[in-house]
Amino acid sequence: MNKTELIDEIAKAADISKASASRALEAVIESVTATLKQDGTVTLAGFGTFAVSARAARTGRNPRTGEEIKIAASKVPKFKPGKALKDALN
Image (cartoon, rainbow, N blue to C red; front, side, top):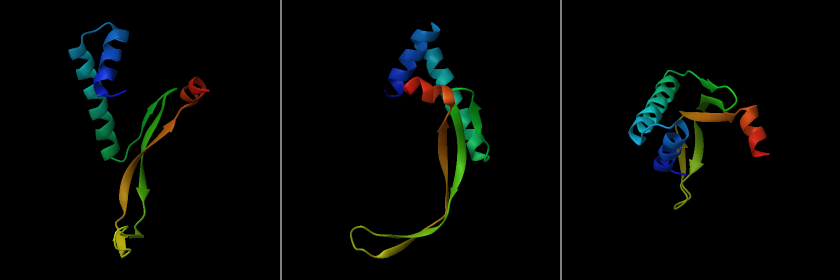
């Protein structure tokens, strides 16, 4: 499912226009992004938790040349599914 299909599903399920569903989805995405930028977490009960994790600096290899390269430390988003979401899939 892509973003357009998700907007269609939201509009149908909530009985709202596609424009309203699009604005709502954009607002959720922006809010989650803003919170993660501040090293916060977003927990949606039953669905899951979005959080930021630190990835340490490390040495890697260039796959073309085999040359060692240094990979800088970075922050990466993580998602941990909630119990209700796990149960819905099994």
